[in-house]
Amino acid sequence: MTSRPLVAVTRAIPETGLELLGEHVEIRLWDKDTPPDAAELDTLLDGADGVLSLLSERIDGPLLDRHPGIRFVSNFAVGYDNIDVPACTEHGVIVTNTPGVLTKATAEFAFALMVATARRIPEAVDYVRDGKWVTWGPKLLLGQQILGATLGIIGFGRIGQGMARMASGFGMRVLVNNRRQDPKLAAKFDVTFVDFIDLLKESDFVSLHVALAPETHHLISTRELKLMKKTAILINAARGPVVDTDALVAALRDGEIFAAGLDVTDPEPLPADHPLVSMPNALVVPHIASATVQTRNAMSSLAARNIVEIVNGRRPAAVVNPEVYDRIDRQS
Image (cartoon, rainbow, N blue to C red; front, side, top):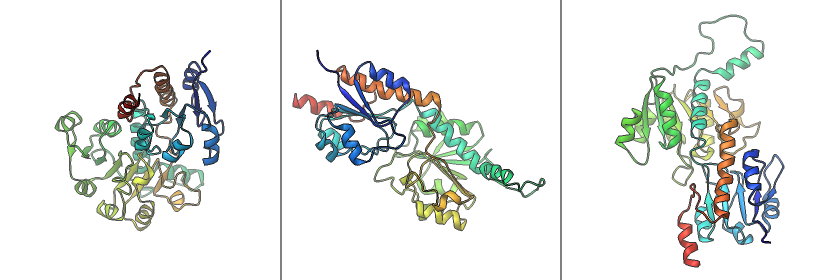
């Protein structure tokens, strides 16, 4: 009897995915709440045919050299900046991700982060809990209005488009900066494609929805923050290193911008004693934009289905590096 493929799963995921995987492969599960360190990851991957990874695991060439039996990596995320995709392709390793299923939840959360930051809701909650609420005041915790304001969206993929769709319900003017300008998308979502600098200067809210890549690392730094309005709010639900953390701390401290709402940070996780954590005009949450029961179940199922398709000799829909199949064919 042929043994089933062994898949290392680097953290406990929702049962929908684990149950599906268990029907087709043997599972070696890292069952701690914190991610494995480098040595623990090597032990987990020893003899594995594939990996179901999270953003916390770096999958690169040296790791694949140490574990030549790995044939596929299924990333439990839409982003895959934790994976050296060219190295995987060179090693003939198929990489998959979980696009689409987390679009609504992430866009919804980015918009919620914008509302909470603009209207200073966390500050207001703390104000009451700290026993400071003694009367109504005409100047108490004044925030920024969202209705009719200008929203600048940087990166107009699925999540950026979802953000634009919600903004339309608030009568917002939406500016977009994207690598590719698409007149059809502009008409469909009632947005205006603009230059990066113009977006920063004109927007009341700047929301980041780009993938992390060398060209987007520190996309927002000192120069960009100084271009923004002093009343502007920065929202980041993309990846932490897209924003220069030190520059953001200085801008918030010096009043260069009004506030920032961050689902992601650099470093991540952010230490409790980091300046951003205690700043009243910085709202920081622990990377939970996709954290709904429905979305995480869907991500779990898709990550598992990607593996099931591969081990059954079929090409999964969510392949990051489809060119790997050409390489596999050449080597066959």
